[in-house]
Image (cartoon, rainbow, N blue to C red):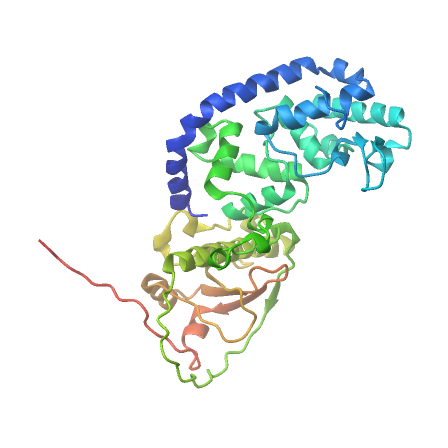
Length: 407
């Protein structure tokens, strides 16, 4: 995401940020009360009906899930996340104590001791990510516990799907499947931003949801009206799951254009199209940034990989998106163009500035990304001189600048 766009979102959020102050005071008071009630010594001594969900009452699980819901929602997953609960498993089953994970054993009292011990381990080892990751508590529940006890150090968003969504929104690079690492990545992004570093973590999470909503793929297609379906672009796969590949392509002569039919008077929604293009473009830049860094690291050039710069995020005037490097240290200027389409007939759009820089820089490359929304996007690297001077390329002016002086 470009810094100017981020600032626009932040300006809008600043208008409503004071509205969250009262809510924060209330939920933070409940959070403090909870952690005061449940010290590590108290947790170790909990009885089964003081811990579980399913029987009602002010239990550890009920309070952290329901009373502290505004601190971070974990309602989206089943009660098995708590490791031990009271209830049914299947429509015809009877309610009873049930153990959610095999490693806790088959006896509910033994399981309880193991679970409580694991919760205490989390609270006592907040700085040791190796221990936190190996801890058997389920990821969403683990995240909620850590965030409640350490509100300034752990992000209060626990769903992997939601974390992936925000990571993709900001175009961040990520190699880990761990929710803890993804939370840390977003917090690092927050704390390194001149505006957001002054916000509380609670405010930051409110900013994310109020500005960008929830993942699009949480909306069921059957529930979307025809008018909205064309606006709904599926969420991209987590960046760490991509297996992109480089392809060498040949430019063929364009087929003869088909005769255009009569104009049916369809109105093009340029605003919607622009939003879609931007999401697709941002994803392509995220992929190329990751690909360039990986390529340099694999070839023993970590020092150059650390210098790869997504310069267009802060400066649109340079005429390219990413500054990278050849293995010998030569600078490489990359303009990224992305499409949802498969390899074949396609088109890309260039600004006058991009075209000018592409024509005048010897080290300028186009990286064209096909199937940018898939788990296996294709990357075509081609030098600007080879692309622009190919006789099979047809350049078509589609925009005019009108200079005026009025009074």
